[in-house]
Length: 71
Ligand SMILES: [Zn+2]
Image (cartoon, rainbow, N blue to C red; front, side, top):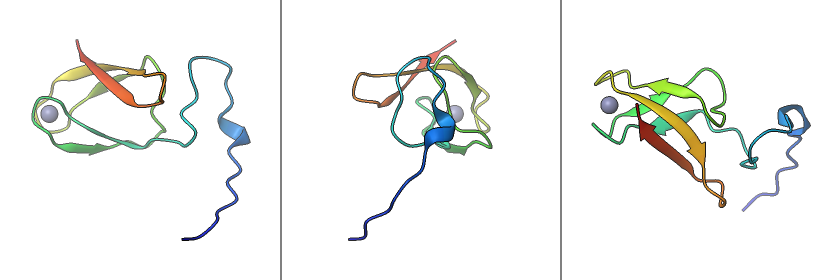
């Protein structure tokens, strides 16, 4: 175990719930493919699966877990 001293001040945007760390990948609920993203995923973003082409809207749970709703 290591202690990392994260400096995540730059992702304070004052909207939605912060997740604690930037999430830069997601798993497609339709085909279960893992999709990496260039930008950290944010609340209310629309993501498209690179594999099956389905589109999803993101939201975060109170626990900071990513949820994907099919569009
Ligand atoms: Zn997919």
